[in-house]
Image (tube, rainbow over all chains, first blue to last red; front, side, top):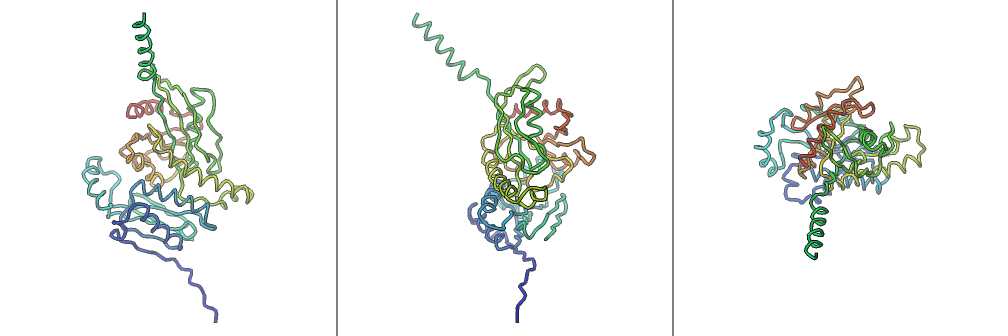
Length: 129
Length: 213
């Protein structure tokens, strides 16, 4: 009997506590390992801006090195309303920096699995291949 | 006599180190096909008569960081000297098959994809070398894309002043207000780099930006 391979979508939820003690390189490696396994990461919180660019850099290097890997789709949705004032954001800034902005959710998936993500301030649509 | 020579020497050295007009490194960042090179070309043509690079409808036309040095821009009788740094569009994915849809042959498409990925890495590595940055966004596209947020977030983290440009206002679908709503803490200027629309307001904002650099 031939077993049909399950090609369904796999989501992996990562609580912020799982990456909070890792340094930037370890965080990115952990996320990319899951993505290369063709799983979609749902991360509680968000990466720091410089970690996001590092993730993009490492992704580009991997596109060159790994056959069939086309990159990632990445979006962050947070509880912040876009029209929140500057001073309110400043007030919350330090607390968020320490906590990794846990009211945010980061979704990262391999581009071969996630076709597109559309974000408006209040909602995020994820289209899969 | 010796004192005079010494005085003149000191004056000249002081002039070299302190009065030489600083060249402001102005970067152009944004996603692919937003019109970064079109805008850099417009500025270069306005002030030097030459272009900085080629433009195309196919994404990732700019795959290397390209410069134009000593670009003197005049605004209201003031002159500032810039080094314009046009960067490849930043994206999170590059698929050579997308280029094949634009009637490119497989080998050529793969080569372009490889160069595009390297260009993105190069663009990110240049972030630290900018004095000020113009983030160019296609005003017909959704401004809430994470690439835009990541670019602006990185500039803020590096304390680099930012000007947001909503390009392609000549197109019907353009929505500058949506871009202003997405970036409420930044100066947003709506322009058409292709047709040179609203460039006066753009240069005014660039001078304001240069003051913060």
